[in-house]
Image (cartoon, rainbow over all chains, first blue to last red):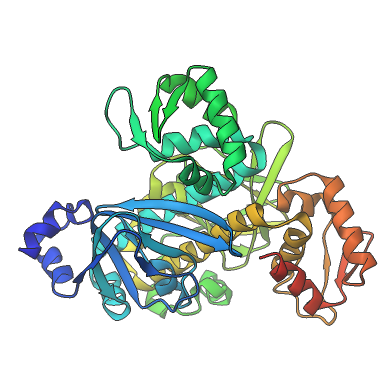
Amino acid sequence: MVASALKKVPFFRGLTPREINQILSIAGVKHYAAGEMVFAKQDLGNNFFIVKTGRIKIFTTVGAEKRKTFAYLKKGDFFGEMSLLGGRVRSASAQAADDSELFVISKKNFKRLILENADFTLKLLHTLADRLNKCNKEVESMLFHNILGRLAEAILELSKDKHTKPVKMAIDQNELAQYLGTTRVPVCRAINTLKRSGVIDYRRGELIILNQARLRSIAGNAQ
Amino acid sequence: MVASALKKVPFFRGLTPREINQILSIAGVKHYAAGEMVFAKQDLGNNFFIVKTGRIKIFTTVGAEKRKTFAYLKKGDFFGEMSLLGGRVRSASAQAADDSELFVISKKNFKRLILENADFTLKLLHTLADRLNKCNKEVESMLFHNILGRLAEAILELSKDKHTKPVKMAIDQNELAQYLGTTRVPVCRAINTLKRSGVIDYRRGELIILNQARLRSIAGNAQ
């Protein structure tokens, strides 16, 4: 039963039955209710996680008020590798954004997987390179872009797996502000600018992309 | 002769003679004069590099004027893996900051190394995790810190392998400004603040850390 569940998770799609069985034999499954913390920044890191169902938010807090969302992870995405590879405490917090099920793999088994399962290791390398690339681009973006360009980039990133036409997604202004690591007021202003120029519509927590090409150009022009 | 050179490069220190020979058999050595470009952002990426001697600057440019230095790499550090793992163009530029010699490994041999040499792969994973961690911290820092805290962090980062007492390093204000991705004026102002409070001295391109604990606290307080 767990084997067939694993096959539905994109992470495992390229793996042979033997490799899936290897991971299966060492992974537990754990349920997290929406809002529940998986781990907090500065916790000792002992486990690696792969999302089976649901949605996990990776974020950091500075002081009591300031928050920055790094990513929303979905089915097949993994997290928790950073403190296992660095041998250190968690560098960010992870929280279930929706009810979620996670495959849980211990530090010891994670290290065994790396040494014994080349596909797993390649997947890990590619994902770390992608995340580093995305992070470097964010640093660039923060240095060289205005809030409008960064909002346009964030909307494109957050909607990249939505395939309706036009693209619609549910997201509130606080979430968008946290994704940009800023407060609501400048985000609200930037949303209104995009609305007035007919690029997006936004009402009651639903964002609709009306002009994808313009949105790309606003994100890209800023670069 | 190249084998003994390899043993002096930190990257190879943990490897067995057999593993060193494997890398040796597939790596070329290339010389770059100070100021020479190794590759430019948007170039197609075909090679992986390990620094044998010298110093390599990794940076990005936006428009004609704006620059952001991501890192200075030294003996034993590697770069160029990003576009080989992602199969894409270079995400940043690399330039010899001093006269430098690089071990050059082709994309094909790089992929073979990953599959056949577990120590090489672990080294790669750890380094990517460290760089991602550093990048995430920089995003945090940019969102939540003032220029003074960021300058203090940059000075600590750039001087971390200097072991004189007090710590001294040669760096000009333009380099510092590029490291922070900003312009000279705010950096100059922040340097003067640190000088006035007796934390550093700075004259004619030489920076001296007078009070390491205070500097750490300014970098840390900002977090």
